[in-house]
Image 1 (cartoon, helix red, strand yellow):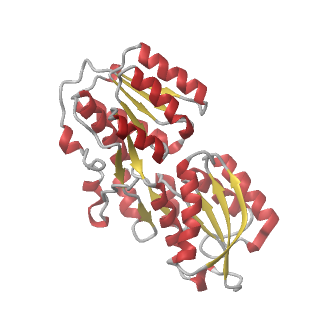
Image 2: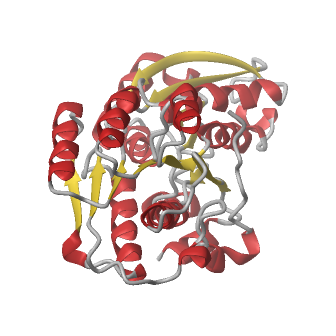
Length: 343
């Protein structure tokens, strides 16, 4: 499917831009209304995920600003278990919610979840974890009230690689062998974001003319502690051979920082580290030099876009099956600007 990614972020207008929603379904299109009697069921794959905590907090606040009552907005923790989340969705259906917003535990479960929700005649907005292209085509072909709101993870991976490539081979090729030796710390291997970030971060280096050498690739499940352990083990095994550490998200990158510091290495001097999400702590680490860079995953625009799609469904309006937002590179040059906008 051709992605209709509409740019939402401009370096000179970060604060204003953070108030704009995704794609065609921006907050300016929805406005506040009388939704006090409307019930919203929200399923989050795991409450302990730092990024999804920011996302669900913003989503709830924005829904309230649109006119929904706080008591009619119920958010459930899937505890990273698809069976648990599926039961929560069935409970929401039994409770007669007017719309469902779902951050899947497993993207591969989208078809099953969609069938359950569509059969109950309830509009469905998927967020953050994108179902397959075939699944999205199915929604369009059947004219169902189902959509996905999020960013194209290929872009985030590409930006990670570009952050490293922009430093230049002379700076990154610490051992002077003409190649970039790296380790990859992946999120969930079933998650399309993890797959794309893993693939396209390296592809960006190759496309920039770099030769690459993968030393290790391990799954950290988006978790800081697991990220720390993986990087610590890799540093013990490969030592100074490691020039770049790619992490699929900032939580794992924050764990990587702990491992790098414990090993006596210094980011920017004898190793480079990039993540994704632009958590506040990560932006601060980019400013201080503890991280080479990260990629801003705009939870504000995405949360607003998801809520706006929910409102359109409730109003009986049509919504595109894919509503896209852009990522943005975060480097020492703009980290403070993004940090100011986030706080």
